Length: 318
Image: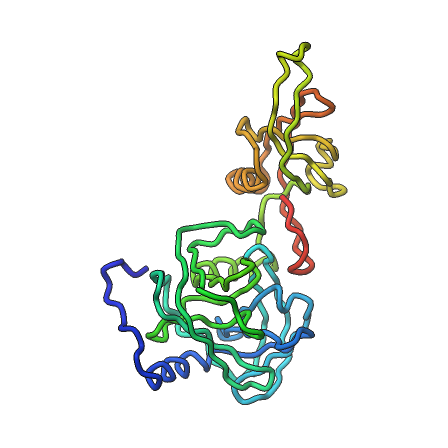
């Protein structure tokens, strides 16, 4: 990781210099033909593995990849992680070389950046902008953990999902995706790609603790007080569905239950539940406090391994 005091390259003030950096990144970028207009981009991250946007290519079991020579090569989808919008594709013979690993680079707000993609014929494309926001570790709206927040100052053009994003020195910061923000492009940082790709190569999906439920915030009133004055207004998570034979189902959790606590820690938002599950881990036994028909109950549930997602648009549940 670069320290804040590390020397930074100057702002690019000449188009030939920027063009040189685009050409430096270009050999690692491929196009991926999809049934969506404009296709997607991909990065040859390892000698025979391309990473791209899960949202863009998840339905392509054997995607068609096009390198700089314009020749199409069939790849094989290894796995996807909808929560971080990352997909991994095994490929050989494509005209590309593995990216120059730049380490865990963290840009500043306002830094000049550019994205590199290819059209479905292998033609080079680039887009230019700046870093609009940065921050520490965060979770996507799908629940995926991302080590650094790198938000671009605008959206992505068609075909730029999965594109390489680099700084003005041509160092790759990560991969572009439009799936994690409604208005802005997001950059998945290198360290996140390395971590998630390792899981995809080993398991075909990212292993995460799993209850098998869908929830939404709810407020209710406990009726155990006996009198109106003694009744308690409670906040929790309403269970709206329970997957058949999932850990929650096997433990006796029902649709309509309201989850109040997990291991005695209050649950108010779905994010609270996601965080608690991550802290516990697969195989852990957790004590869930809940409200059912106005009565307080508790259940012990052994967390499972969440099944691999079939596609990137499926709703991710705890």
